[in-house]
Length: 203
Image (cartoon, rainbow, N blue to C red; front, side):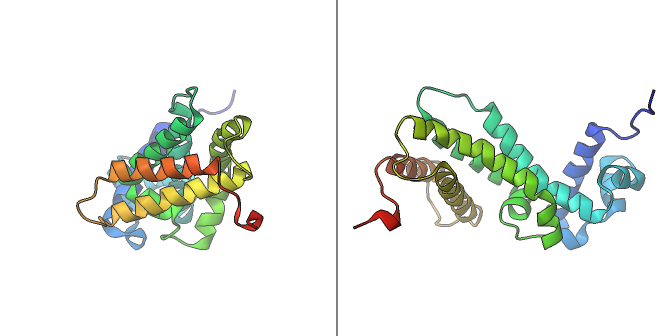
């Protein structure tokens, strides 16, 4: 019988929560393993055991962004209206970005950290994109994707979500009903996929 794990998933989540708070307050440069461990009520030994290093902890924060999005997609109800379901998926992305702006910057925009951090969580990012793409396969099955490939449509959807989140997090433009902006923008994209040709197919 093997030795029981000294540090479990609960400890890992506590450390990631503490690291997210630290980066939001002090930036990546202010991330200290001792400080994160103290904030999480554990020791630096736990950080090394679970993440290997400071770089490993930063990469895990980036991966967490996509893990949260994957969980959000999995929890969304699947209805008989795949276009409606994609609007709801976008609003889930919005809730993620507003609730975890640091994870959005680090994981989605790659505005923080270093290339080695991004490479470390790329597999998680791509597996989450696969789940999103499966939502577009439902559109394709119903003849609602026009001439687009499901992967292209998923990337277009992601790009619009990322752009809307960036604008909202900057508070621009002021006085806008952002939920309405998200609903209208995403709905226009999703409905337009059913009729629009790709640029290369235009006469």
